[in-house]
Image (tube, rainbow, N blue to C red; front, side):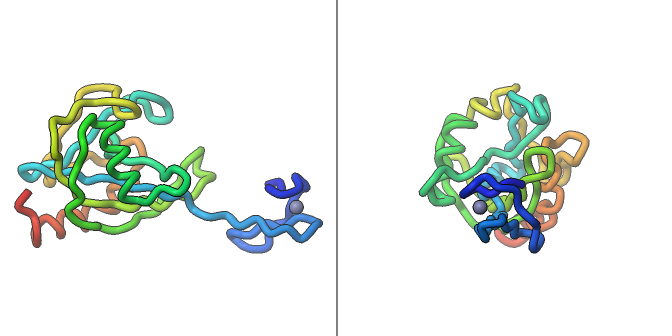
Length: 167
Ligand SMILES: [Zn+2]
């Protein structure tokens, strides 16, 4: 990669550190954003992606942080953009790693359990089809998903629901 400060080429010094001949340090940090597991009657809400990558595949509502935005603010913004209604965050479930941009960009997906506060309708990135409710026993796997990392999250979600779920 090239130095973000001077544009010179860099040498990799560690998994997450690239240094140029001017000794500028370029640290690779994961992109971060909220993901929403919106639950109702034991089912989880998915949208259909409207654009590439993975157009037509299922995805949970969520996205990356804007500058100076908190995870909670982004969660509400993404809900309004992608499913046309606000949500109430019920609990923090966990964070899960994945990659983006052809597997070159590390991502931390900060995942919340939430419930609807209005009537959902598909929009923005999830405007590729009708919204879909899937039971916790029949959550979509790699073949139906856009990014497959939620499969790592499902055991935590099922455990959470078994303990706290009355949504
Ligand atoms: Zn430099």
